[in-house]
Image (cartoon, rainbow, N blue to C red; front, side, top):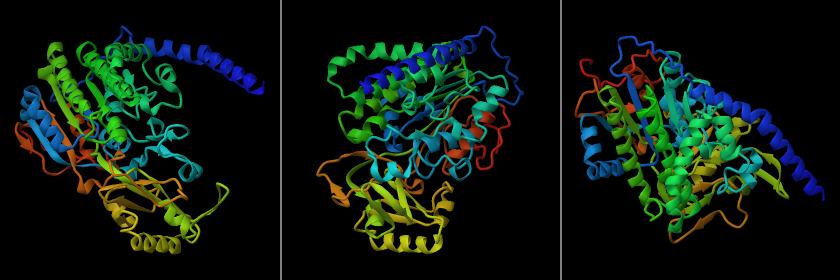
Length: 489
C-alpha cells in the first residue's frame, strides 16, 4: 500500500510540474524559436561566407572517411574543393563531450575542465555497473562549460544559430534552433528533454519526422539500440536540413552519432554497425543538397570532423581491483572504509585520482604498482602528470593509463577476477591517446584553398577558423586560425 501511495504522489508531483513549469516553458520556447521577428545580422565585411555548416561524424576513422568519399562522388567533389586533414589532434581522453566543447570553445580540457563523460560518485565507480552508465550519473553538459563558445559570439552578433545533437547545448539561450543530445538528457527522459532542454516545436517536429521515417523499419527485427541510433540520426538530419534549407541559419552544428552508439555495443565490424556508415554518407549528401536547394551553397562553408576513433575490445580489465587487492581501497559489505587511490574508466583510458593526504608517497606507490603489473593488466602506457600536461588533459586527476589493443578498462570492483576475456568481441570503445590515433577534419566553400592537405592541426583550431569564416573575432587561449584561406598566409 505504501508503495502505491508513493507512486501516486510521485505521479501527482510530475503532473503539477508538467503544467506549472514545463508547459509554460514550452510555450516560451515556441515563441522564441518561431518568432516572426528575426535578428538583423551585424556583418563586419570581413566574412568569407555568411553560412557555416559544421558536422561531427562520430567515431569514424580517416580510412572510413576515405571509403565514404570513394562511394560518394558528391562528397568527394566537395572535399576535393577544399582542405582536409587526416591528422587532427583530439583531446585526452578521446570522447565526444570533450571534443565538442574543445571544437566550439577553442580551449583544451585542462582549461574548460570537461574531462569526463559523466560525473560518477565513488560508490557508483566501485559498486555500480559500468554497462549501465546513464541510470544515476549526471552527464557533463552546457552547465559545466564556463567558456565562451562560437555559438555564443555568433548569436550576440545577430546571426541565426542552430545546434542539433551537441552535448553542451542543453537549455542554451544562444541557440535559436536547438535539439541537444537526447542521449545526454536521460535524467529528464525524452519528453522532459523536449519540453525543458530544447526548442520545443522545432524538436517535436523533427523527432516526429524521425519516428515516422523509422516506422517501416520496425519489422526488421532490430535491437533497441539500432532503433534509437536510427531515430536520433534521422531526427537530427531532418532538423539540420530544416535549419539549412528553411531557416537559413548562419551557423549550424550537427551531430551524427549512430555508428558510435551501435559500435559500442556490437563492435565496429558488426552487421548492426555497418549501416550507420552509409547513413552518415547519405545525410552528409543531404545537407549539401539542402544548401544547394536553399540557394546558399555558394555562400556556405562546410566543415566536418570525426571526434575520435573507436576500437573493438574483447578483454575487460577491472583495474580498480589492483588498488583494492593492494590495500589502497578498503571495503566491507559494499561500503567504503578508506580509499587512497582509485580510477574512473573512459573505455580505453583510466583516470586515476590520489587522496590528498600523503599524496606524493601514495602516488609513488601507485606508479610502481601500475608499472609492475603493466603486462598482466593490459596497460599500454602509464601517463604521469607531465605526460597529461603535454596532452592538455584535465587537471581533476593525477595519473592515467591507456589500454593495449583489444582491452577495455572497467572501473567497478570485481571480486570474481581481475580480467574477463571473450573469444569474440564484446563491443567497441574509445578514450585512446590522441597522439597515437589522429582523426579527420575537412573544410570547403568560398574563400577556402582547394586541394590543401593540413598536416598540423588541433581540434581547438576549429572555433577560431569557423569564426574567421563568419568575420567574427573569436578569441581563445589555445586555438589558432588555420592557414586554409585564399589570399592569406
